[in-house]
Image 1 (cartoon, rainbow, N blue to C red):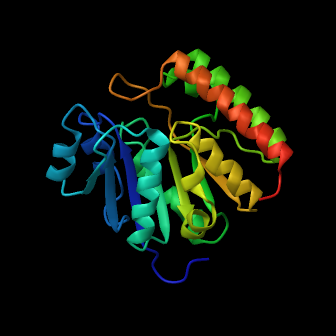
Image 2: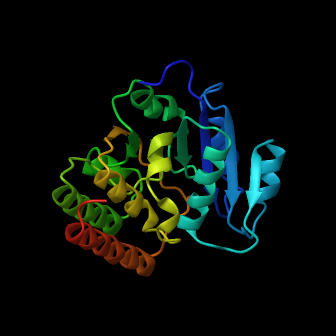
Length: 239
């Protein structure tokens, strides 16, 4: 349990999020976050201008470094600014940031070290919310495999709405992970290796035209990289 009022920092790994950034920020419960940090990965739109208009602490990669590399910068900055809890929210409005308080509460109470916002409560909700069928099926397949390999019972590992206690980010060597999308899985696998507790809450599925989403070829690459990361875990299950 965290004693006293924790310092909560929200980080947003941004890429071409000009149209959705403000909506995502506005939905965060007022007064919950001590600070919001936007790290822009060399967007071609006006994401940086919008972030500065919203008076958010903004950092810019001078060239596109990748989704995983963006998160590395996000977490490093959050720890440097003294975060007790770090919340990562994709700024593309695909996730309901109004649920941030519910996401961090179990960490504050000491019940979990990591919390995930799961979009997979029922198949109907996922598909009605606009999740493409192939993404839903791939998500379910990978999640089942991950649960079996890692000994967990989560409904989704592939969410862009997650929260970490600071000790997770200090103990997990996230700077060694991929600069690409599989970073999301590598940090969870490493967290399981180190014995951190992972929980989840259901969140609405919200795919819209302005939401970012990787295409089919990159999804396939991500899937195979996830399976490879699990194989490495099976070979070396201890940190």
